[in-house]
Every structure is written in C-alpha cells, then in structure tokens.
Image 1 (cartoon, rainbow, N blue to C red):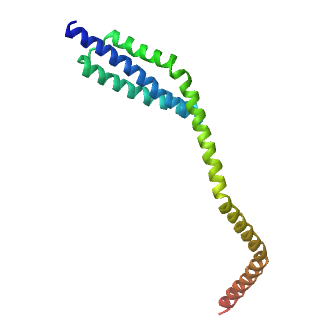
Image 2 (spheres, rainbow, N blue to C red; image 1 turned 180 degrees about the vertical axis):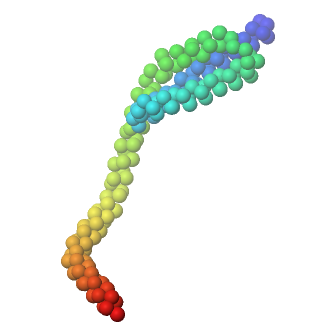
Image 3 (cartoon, rainbow, N blue to C red; image 1 turned 30 degrees about the vertical axis):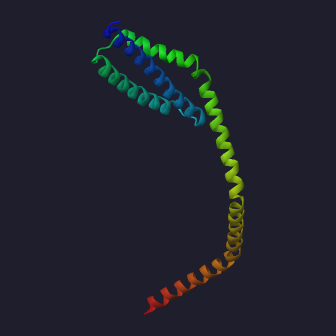
Length: 162
C-alpha cells in the first residue's frame, strides 16, 4: 500500500475521532442542561460558543493533517464518528450521567442537611431570641424616642429664646 493511501486512511480516522470527540463534549453540555434548566438565550449562547470552538478545532485538524484543504470525506468521517457515537454510547450516556449526578447531589444535600442540623437549630434559636429581645425592647425604644423628641423640642425652644 502506498504512503499516500495510508495517510488518507489516517486522515479519515482522525476525522471520525474528531466527530466522536465533538459529540462526546456536546453530551456534557446536554447533561448540564438537564441538571440546570436554561432559557433559550443561554442555550443559544452555549451552542454558539460550542460550535465556534468546534469550528476552530476542525480547522486546526484540517490544517495539520491536510494543509487546510477541506475534503468531503473528512466531513463524512466526522459525521460518521458523530453517528457511531450517538447510536452506541451516546444513546444512554446523557440519561445515565445526569441521573447519577442528580443522585450524588441528592446524597450530598442530605448529608449536609444532617451535618448542619445542629448549626441550623442554633441559628433558629438565636433568631428567636433576637425577635424576643426586639419585641421586649420595642416599648423602651418608643419611650426613649418620645423623651428624646421632647428634649430636642425643649432645647430648640431654649436656644431660640436666647
């Protein structure tokens, strides 16, 4: 087999691998979207950055492997890699990973809730005490405000007379 044909086969394999990598990375974006709900603006923004970075990566691969010349079998290879990944691994990957991450988050929240329970109890008790103190000092504050207002008026009157 000639070296040119071997190079073309390697280039096709690189294209297939590039398609698999692109789809694999996009699956992580889909997992993130399932964990945190996005509105259409942020979905579009994520897609814009993702596809722009993919375009740069594909251009770099074409530049390194094929002197920047776009070959249709490279596009076919990338599409084939994407299709193979989606039909084999990617079919269940997003659902599996997002459910595992959701379960881990649930376990972490339950553990933190258990660990922080005494702290939260203390915070509630301190807040209740502060409300009780605030309620008890309300009459004192009202009385002091009344006396200070009267004192201020008396001071104004005495200063205006002199």
